[in-house]
Image (cartoon, rainbow, N blue to C red; front, side, top):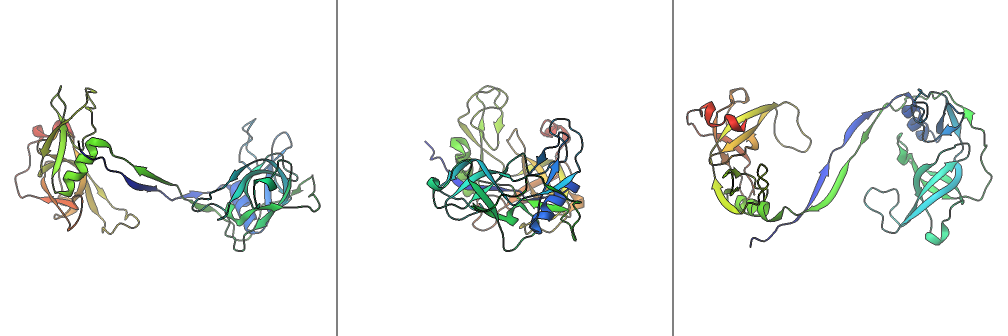
Amino acid sequence: MTDVLSAPLVVEFPFTRSLGPVQSAFLTGLRERTVLGVRADDGTVLVPPVEYDPVTANELRELVEVATTGTVTTWAWNPSPRRDQPLGTPFAWVLVRLDGAATALLHALDAPGPDAVRTGMRVRIRWAATRTGAITDIACFEPYEGEAGPDEPTPHDGEFTDPVTRIVAPARLDYVHTPGRAQSAYLKALAGHRTVGERCPACRKVYVPPRGACPTCGIATAEQVEVGPRGTVTTFCIVNIKAKNLDIEVPYVYAHIALDGADLALHGRIAGIPYDQVRMGLRVEPVWAEGAAHPDHYRPTGEPDADYDTYKELV
């Protein structure tokens, strides 16, 4: 029985988002220690503001300023803060209805323990020392025993100097990946500069990387088959945008490669040939970097191109 591997895996994709006039005014306002809401068609004030009425779907543009004090409507205690959460010590997640607003804002409440938090308690915003035009400009909420803010919000034109027009929204997922029996065997073979797939007992196709079952027949696979190392480019694309933290100069070619003996193409980078000379049918072989657990890239073998009929089912 092959030992099953596991390893931590991080999937991260920060992207830039453009802001419309309502969200731009809201985030710029936070930078200026001003909380803006938007008035809905029924006269209620929504905080955070939205661009369209949740009931009528009409566009909303009437901005108003609400108080920086409010009331906790519900909460949950967070005993173990995670990376990039608002506070590094245990805190409460709270929904706070700011004075003058009809809806609640989600944020963190700095409290010594869950016994110090209750629904209905009064709180106020604690502003971050450095503000850039993001929800994190509110460092957190804190308990407050002072005067309540006005119930009727003040009209605001939403105009600020140097408004925030876009933000970078990070998306990240940290988890432990267990590839399973079939892919564990595949990864261990790669560490020895070998590529193995598994053959379906029914259709006899060899799948690389193996999945543990035939995607066509739905039958479990167990028979290991070594394929390659050479293969054929079935299709490809030219990459012209340099990826962050990837030390590869553009343009370069990324291709689907049908290894000899495999019935499923895998993907890899093509090098050792000008990008504009890569073509379907090009015969290639893997190049391994020292100590690497997978091929760094594939290069031409110098063989004649493969006939289209030999790989057309894998395009």
